[in-house]
Image (cartoon, rainbow over all chains, first blue to last red; front, side):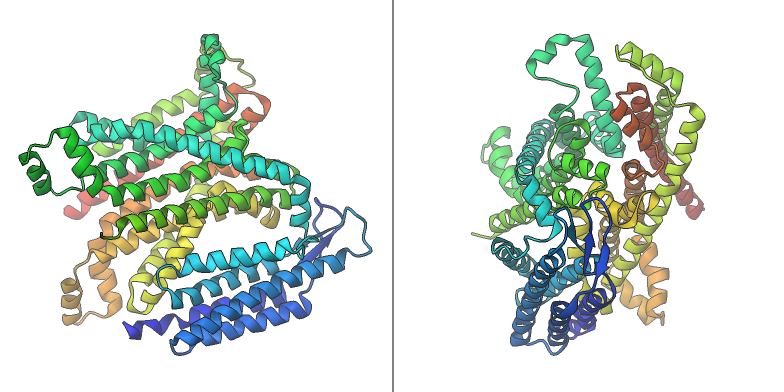
Length: 382
Length: 241
């Protein structure tokens, strides 16, 4: 296996090359007269050069022989490069804004974004060279922690994204909570629907085929179309039976968003639940029946524990999907982070779009990593 | 052909529902205000635009996913696999809608944002499918091919890919349907797709346009599914002689 570690040595070099090229050739920051107008590009200056040099150093360390001190040094260099870049961006933004009108914004340029991505990739590669299994997660947490520290120290305050956040901090916090509520409610509804369907699918027959066809058929329907159809269908239902309004049912708002999202989660959940419950060896099941367990006990005490890893995997897929799909709820008036994204798109305001989109990505990755950790500890043999 | 029949029937029913008169009847029967209908000709034009976008996105995702999947299973690319997995998982964690939103200020209105989103979202299913399918080819078969004097490239094209074709084609089908379904989102960035009447309908409370767009978009996705299944069934029959 050691011979296999060499061929991808160009990967860190490519990441460092991307960082240097982005810093040298693309705008580092742009200075715009207000939050809606595209700005004039500004180069990266000394901090960019330092960060680029550090990235190149990290890549060279990783490209050499696989030694643990090299990987540790590379990780340190990538993390320092990340910090230098962030502080340079914050400082540069403050310098650009000095003497400008209050509406002026210093926006992160494409070069800065690409360089940050490349640095994160380098840090990930270095961390994976130290810890093969949890390296990516460790690097993410380190980068996130450093960023939070730098932001907390007020060093990023002049960046346009931070200005936009300060103007909307309450709205963003409320949207995150709404978003979590939407995806959590969808996941619960989907689970409640999927458990009986999965049990139905365990027995072969026409019912199993019908369930299969139904849940995979929903996947084919475009999400936008399903949400729209739910709005139309629910308003029709409410026009026919106005009494339902008193139960809190509404055609616009969280109801269509939760139902729509839950419908898409049915496929991963039903097939995962069915596969998990079917994972037990037929001999084990026969033995369980032979020692006198009732079907209910077989299900709860044999099938469920043996299928747990598959079940957790399905839950993880569904939870990540629920975070992404709930974004579409913004379009049917359900609020959440999608509402911020759509408001930003309507205004063509990049910072507002980012304020909605970055938390969606962060939540999806956090849910994924969290459930992976949970599944990992559950899998370990006693 | 049997597997294609159900999606084809669903597609035909939904296509009929998207016609202005039928949709108008249904919307009024639901007791909703109808609004201005989308003419059938305009709907057909939008469907063609929608399909063109989806197919380009599918080709981008399918080509890149297949290429990266093959690369990750070669000896030279084995070390790349964890990195590719991480990248593909990250691409999957970003919903297409968010890619469109993020791309909008950078690359502008129209087709490019949705093509980027389709390519990013379809990449992982194809790559995972390809890697998984190629892994099912037994090592003895590979060794036998090498023993017969085939070069690595010949082994790939003549032995490994034909043996792994089933799951790879299934992954491609999933991504084609995903692309046709997801292309509707492009309407949010100003691309002309069947999502356009849906967005217009939501914004103007025009239930008729909304139902027409939703039915037509769903019909197109089921049609793509049926077409792929029928083509694969035909291909299978042709190969078996």
